[in-house]
Image: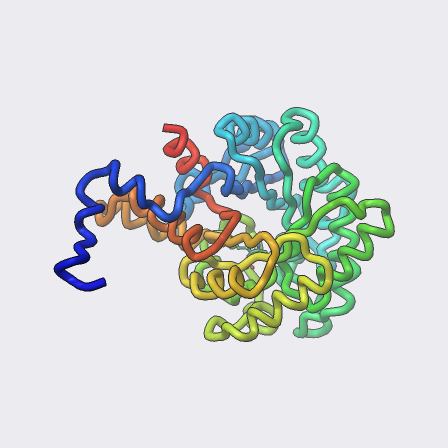
Length: 324
Ligand code: PBG
């Protein structure tokens, strides 16, 4: 294929030609919308760093899920902000806790949408780490029991899928075993398999009020320069029983998404995280980029890299646009 015999511009001449040879298409079916639920009533508190996103009390949450469903989005991913935090993050597995109540109410009011729950401790611990502390150390194996208990409590409330994000070794196996033991062998796990210690989670920590009170997450989340290690992390999760694997963040890890797609035969999710969302919103607000086009370009690039599922704060906007 050489110029002048091959002229790629021939097939770029107009939108119909471009449509005809387009290799990747984004669909509303690919999207998952993350939501933040907080205690109280009639609360819809804007998250400053994430325009269009809110901490919502249950009443508003249910309305928002209804809107999400009506846009054709197949699933929401829930994060809870509990009334009280403690050393052990006991709010995470409280049968009357914020997520457990939210799942029940959504399932009652909007049965026809998937409810996925984040399984982690950072929103529930007073120290803001994703696991239990032993001195200043985040202890792996004692955390597994709490994560398993949390997943079971979500399943009991009616969650359709659990998504462990704490990055403790063995968390998928611990959760799979606990779910099976309690009769939830049919409940799938979406594993945050390759989750990096990323600066792009900044706005989320405001949204979910889960910033670590000391230190950082580098002893449990992955080191950004690593790619082979991501494949080992994913292999572990597959062997432990993950049904869906995930790479997080998405945009600065498109190479990892592509590699995971090539090396593993499970549905692959990518988390287009808060900082990736906020950067576009900020640049749009400043008039520096066309936010809508940037959004679609980013989401399409995540799909092109190999993701089957995209978890994104853009879900509603993108769905509305895709609907036409
Ligand atoms: C909880 C969790 C985090 C995110 C999802 N689940 C925060 C973190 O690991 O610090 C980040 C999501 C985002 O930035 O959009 N562990």
